[in-house]
Figure (spheres, rainbow, N blue to C red):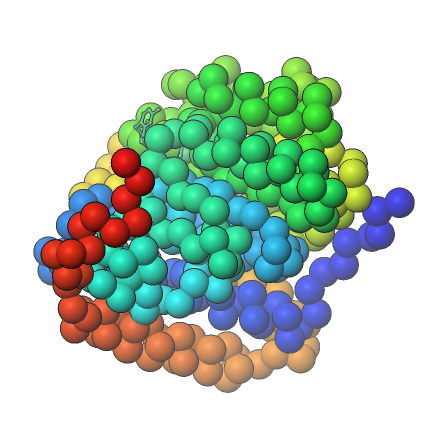
Length: 324
Ligand SMILES: Cc1ncc(C[n+]2csc(CCOP(=O)(O)OP(=O)(O)O)c2C)c(N)n1
Ligand SMILES: [Mg+2]
C-alpha cells in the first residue's frame, strides 16, 4: 500500500522556496542577458511555473530520470544543475554544461538524471517511456518523469506514449504543465478538453489534477505517484494547473492574454503562496525569507558574471561528441 504523502516540514519547505527563487532569478537574468544580445538562439522562460519543477524534484531520488522541454531551465536547476554551467551553456561558452553546443533548449546532464530537453513538441514522451521501460526490464526501481505542455497533449506521440506505458505498466509519470497557452493560442482554441487529465481515461491510466502553483500540493501528489510507479503500480498522468507569467519566447510580450487573467494568476504567484505557507508554519520568519532572497540574488549575479567572462569553445570542439 502506498504510504500517505506528507507535506514538507518548514526547513524542507524553506529549501524548496530557495530553489524556486533560484529559478525565478535565473530566468529573469536570462531575459536581461538576451536583452544585452548575449544569448544566441531562442529562450523560453518558466517564470510562474517554478512550483512544478521544485515539487517534483523533491519527490525524486538522484537515480530517477527526467525529461522536459525547451521550457526546461527550471527542471535542470531543480535537480541540481549549477547555475553557472547553465548560464554558460545558454551563452554558448566552453564551460557550459554541454560545452556550449546545446544552448537554452538543451540543458542536459545524465549524471543528474536530466536525460533530455526536447524542442520538438511531444518528442520527450516516447523517450521517457523508453527510459522507464528500460528500468523496468532491468528490474531497477527508478522512475521516469516527463514534463510537457498542454499543447503537447494534442500531439500523436502523447497518445502513443500513454498507451505503451499503460500496456507495459512501465514506471513512467507523465506531468502536463498546463499553462493555458501553446505559443500564442489559448488552450480553448486548440484543445477539446479543459482538463488534460481526462485523456488518461482512454488508456485506463490513473490521473490527477494538482494546483501547480502550490509547491506543497505538487510535492504531496508527486510522492504518491512516484511511490506507485516505483512499486510496480504503473504510469500516471498528472496535470499541474499553472500559468506562464511571460510570453512564449524571448521577444513575445504576451499581449494577447486578457489583463484580468494575468492579474489573477500573478496574485497566485507560487513564490507568494510559499512565502505565506512558510510564515503560517510559525517556524520561519520574514527575516529568514529575506536572507534566502538575498543569498540567491548574489549567487545568481555571480554565476551570470562568471559565465559572461567564460571562454568560447575551441574550434576543435566542433566535431567532439558528434555522432555521425
Ligand atoms: C512538433 C512541433 N510542432 C510545433 C512546434 C512549434 N512550437 C514550439 S512550442 C509550441 C507550443 C507548445 O505549447 P505547450 O505544449 O503548451 O508548451 P508550453 O510552451 O506552453 O510550455 C509550438 C507549437 C514545435 N516545436 N514542434
Ligand atoms: Mg502550454
